Image (cartoon, rainbow, N blue to C red; front, top):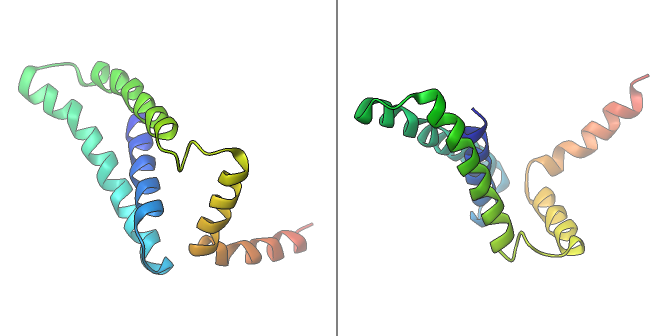
Length: 116
């Protein structure tokens, strides 16, 4: 469901930004935390179905809007993410340089330059 994806992205974003550590460790941890966050968000409609007999499809659709609103709140209230565009570009460059993705970009450029 889209809400689970959004919550997984929020969890991965927070881990990637605030977890100091070596890049080979941050990426797998952020993926695991994203899966955990999405799973916990998906468990809410299941719990509502088991406890109150609520329809899980309706609850999931409604929780998608809650997840989107939560993402907008986090992005607009945190000064790290609500920074001007120049700071965001610098921040993304720092994140890419500190992650394993920074190692993959030169390989991707090499691959794309050889493709017809």
